[in-house]
Amino acid sequence: MLENLFFRRNQKIKKVLNSDIIVVNGVEERASNLCLKNYGIPQEVGERYKVKVIFPRLKIAGVIEYIFSWHSLDEIDIPNFEIEQNDITLRAAKELAPLIKEHLQIEEEIFSLEEQYNKVNDLADLVSASELYSNQLELYEKALVQIENLLIKAKQLKNIYIHLINEGLIGIQIAGYNPDNIRDNRLAFDSKYRTIREEYQYMRDAATAYQELTHQQNE
Image: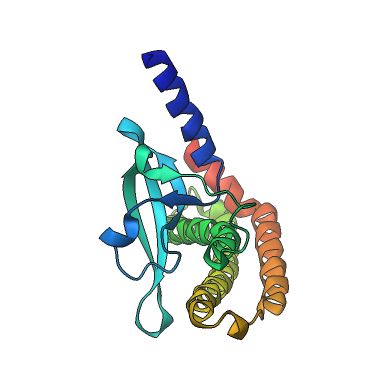
């Protein structure tokens, strides 16, 4: 019997981690102003079958806030998109989930790039003051330019994510009162978002000096 329970839990964990959206029963009673109601985005499973879930909500003046909270596996269900296809909040949540995950990822990358910039800048100052290593100064200066360009592009991408997520969450609030009033102006931003994302990825792949220094630091 314990083996069956263990198997069922593991199967449910796999389904949760493979789902863009999950239902967290009772969460609306414990947290206020959740734009996606009891729908959340699973992030990871920790000890004792606890699931870390992301809930987006809008603060004053449309500022996005993410709530990260842990919930028991028993509190969680997987929504049936075929049965609940008329649920506007569920449809919006499914569309927003990948954007929110990518937004959080680009935030981490920006933080990492800023750390790398400061580190490389400090090393460049040391190299410029050295007779023995001064021949490496050009590599450090080139890496600084590449990191700076990556930061500019990453922040542009971050702003697109924020806009798309913000508009999606506002649309959910409006649709809650009158579904006929909801507008879809995302096509232009989708195109811009895809263009900037592709440019950012290309710049990362082409940033040879930055990659060379990163590889040296990891050795």
